[in-house]
Length: 159
Image 1 (cartoon, one colour):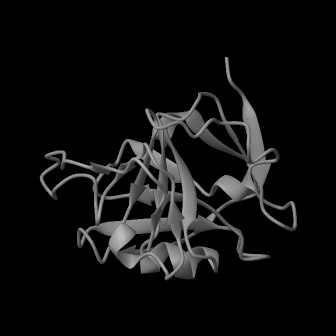
Image 2 (cartoon, rainbow, N blue to C red):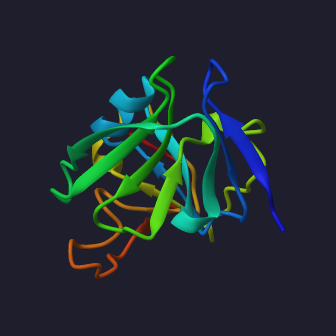
């Protein structure tokens, strides 16, 4: 069984996951840009019951998604401010982990079959989206859960 650990900058908040990700989302939305201080977020998605806080207690910030209008709950360390996970009103049984908070952030694979790039329409100028991956201009599904058709590029797409 997969067992991976991670935590915040100060070490007061630690977590573990006990499965491989269901999929990996690479998100370029402005929410994720602000939340990470970067141009995108890499977010492996897990069944919520596969994630467990093992030290400390996460604080939570809630904000409606600009895309769906449904709440996103950001779980973070109140001492150092590190964001470790997201939960979603839209998908109550799923949880996303900020990939950089894992002790070994490259432990999971990002393959075209298991990774999607979303909110490409909000990517910062100069972003390179790799070929062969499912790419969505915004969300990968309508608000009712209906999957949308992705674009798949045969060459790198430079925004």
